[in-house]
Amino acid sequence: MSKQRKSFIVHFDSLNVLDDLTDEQAGLLFKAIRGYQLGNELELDALTKVAFSPFKNQFARDAEKYESLCEKNRLIAINRHATKSTSGTSGNQTLPKATKSTDNDSKSKSKSDSKNDNKSKEIVAEAPKFNFKSELLALKVDKKVLNDWLAVRAKKKAVNSETAFAGLMTEITKSGLSAPDAIKVSAENSWAGFKADWYNNLSPTQKAKSTHSFETQNYTSGKF
Image (tube, rainbow, N blue to C red; front, top):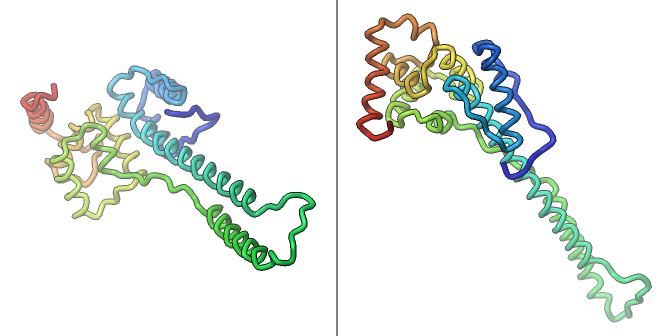
């Protein structure tokens, strides 16, 4: 983070993940949140790391929005100062009558600059848009597997929202799988989402096939 702020936002629905963590993991999660805000990221176990990922991505988006807003406000202030400097006149100076046309031009320019200044005030920084696919790619989900699974979601009209992502992370954490493994299981079974109960109801053979094929794929590609 480029700047340390005095406060930050945690979305309430993101806290649902606490129900699926032990007290120790929940404590580590909040320590990780505090450490991230102070610029000191902690080493976390796999499950807590997955639970922390949505918070981390949200904080990064909020920080980008905040810095963008600060920059826009800085530019507005510079523009306002420049406008006042060019349109102002010195204390008791009296202009000759011959300068009326110039004076009118100055007033016209001042009004134009004022309108532009008002338009500048209306500029609002837009927050970076949440991207369901990008969030999963950031968790090292295989791109081809992810595309196959997103096609299933599209066919079944599942919504790729931030709330849906938070729920997905909660279920993945509950299952004990990594995000890449969980998405692969969903893609293989044509599930539009992922539930820990769905995974637990699979036969041992089906579970072993999914996780083994993922590990083999990454081993042969040099990822492990």
